[in-house]
Amino acid sequence: MSHNHNHNHNYSHGIDMARTSRAFTVGIVLNIVFVAIEAAAGFIMGSLALLTDAGHNLADVASLVIALLALKLATAKPSARYTYGYKKATILAALVNAVILLAAIGGIVYEAVERMLTPVPVEGGVVAVVAGVGIVVNAVTALMFFRDKDKDLNVKGAYLHLAADALVSVGVVAAGIVITFTAWYWLDSAISLAVAVIIFVGTWSLLKDSVRLSLDGVPQNVSIGAVKEKILSVPGVMDIHHLHVWGLSTTQAALTCHVVLRDEVSLTEVSRIKADIRAGAALLGVQHSTVEVEPSSEKCNDSDDHEGGRCGSR
Image 1 (cartoon, one colour):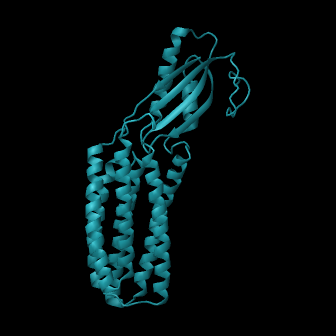
Image 2: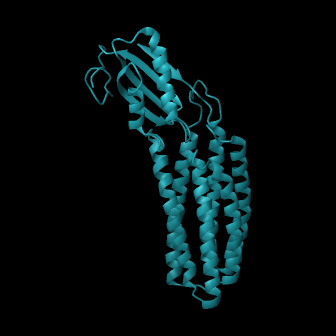
Image 3: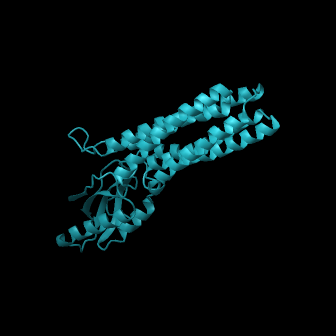
């Protein structure tokens, strides 16, 4: 019986950490400034659309701060107590951000419905101008995350939220212009409800992915069936069991498995088989592989063997 480990403790995996950290920092600063301006304008003008959008942008600031902190923790070196380091902080950050956004949605819907029942006059022109600034701030910040949005769940979350905010600001601008000429004050609340729907759509995907990774589920970008087929295609491999794949972070996946070797496999071929398995898994998005090889005659006694039977059974 033999064990083999392929360890890679580099969190980034294609992400430019300096560029990403800079994007988060710039995004935090720009959004804090904009939140202050938007909240002040919303309070003075009595615009619920501006106030709720400012509240959501403030939640985005908190999300960006949490994501940046998790990014920094993920690069910390492993210790005797935390042998994987703090990579999973990125998963927890994504989950926390999703929960924060869901809470924000509830608050927005409540206030929008209440204001729609009792519309309050607002200055449409000012609303449109302030929201126009929001389009620029959110669009510029979102573009900073565009390159790495498909490589990390936290970066993807930041991109989706900021891009959605830019689109929402477009809607607020349109509402402000219409209110100026029609005095349809209820439109201010209607836009707030539209904000809630857009946020929910973007948050649902983030919530599902973060919950899956928190429960050590298979990452979205990894197919467990494809991994199994790839391993079984390696010459000398007869069967595979105890195959587990989970996320170490929002960018790294890990794999453990027991591989049953054919009777004719010699000891000199074992290293080649392990290397082929690691290489194949890496191509399918699994960066950290632990492989145990077994002869076909060895019996499995582990209780978590979902296939049951002997190690060599098919």
